[in-house]
Amino acid sequence: MGRYKLIDSPEKMWDLFTKYKFWVSDNPILIEDYVGKDALRVMREKPRPLTMEGFECYVMENTDISYPDLSHYFSNREDAYSDFVAICSRIRHEIRHDQISGGMAGIYNPSITQRLNGLVEKSESKISVEAPLFGDPE
Image (cartoon, rainbow, N blue to C red; front, top):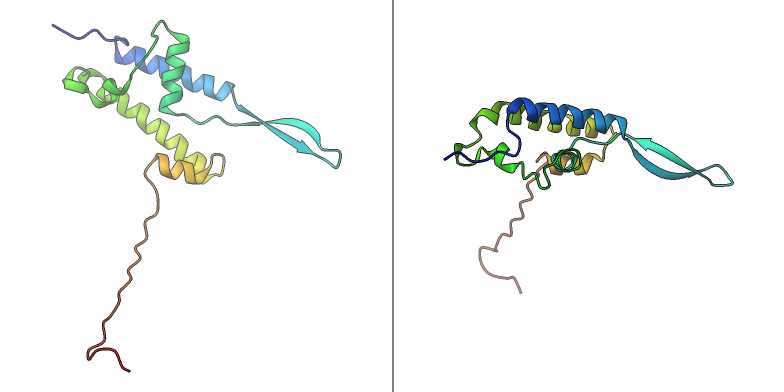
């Protein structure tokens, strides 16, 4: 017996993601700022990044799906979502591309972008202690 799918087709998944991308571009994050010697309060707009969590929240808010655990689709759990593999890969790549390019351009916080995408630079520190050959001199 087949598993019931909350999103019934890859085309529907892509349609939801496309609508999410438009929503993200139409709904920047408002940042409170103060300018001038009189510290006038202004609201600046910053671009909203694409995120998997944001996509899941968008699906919950704009469909009759109350809790879309999309991880099953993206991991192809028990091979039940094989027809979604290509579209999920494309969505994952688009989110990653947005985050990395936004981080590199300074639009998003680069260190958070690095951590989210496993891009943390690794450096090796090696400390060696050598013992004297003939004991401690006195």
